[in-house]
Length: 115
Length: 110
Image (cartoon, rainbow over all chains, first blue to last red):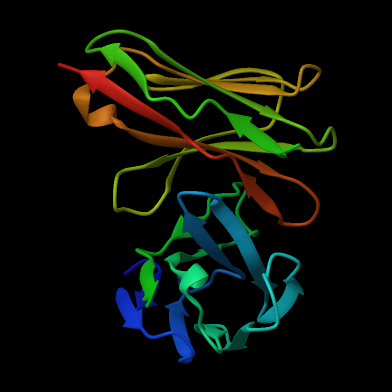
């Protein structure tokens, strides 16, 4: 398996632009998580899905952020409009609860810079 | 009060020594505890999970859990320069809500 795939790996955009981050979880995993990591705030859970359904979005910072999971193999995190304070590394992670571990597998991350 | 706390470090130990990393958490109902390693510029990777009080050993790594004291630790024996990384403590609370600590930066000096 190729692991969790994220694209793009790097994104540089200007304030006010729409940004879309993409994630393909590991096949067969029923949970998908979106995290944001900054030096100031560390690794924060933004939202997670179970079987494509959003379960907890309490970590989404504000209405400018939205996430979707239209099918089991694809999820997006959208920021519209983007602001400089959104600059961070965004990670997607997935795991299967059918196993007896809670091992989350993280993607390589998307480094977002908003100018 | 932060839910998961760790010393930010850096923690420096000489090669071959034991590195001791500590973590405290605030939610008494937490049931699952994890240690992740994150190299600079890379994504976190799970190295240990622990669910019951006591010790759990895996190679050079030992995780220790004390739910009464709300304390989790990670010991790395025979530390190697390749162990130099940031170690993140994580706690799973209600549902599948994973809360990560700020991480402790470990530096193993050759």
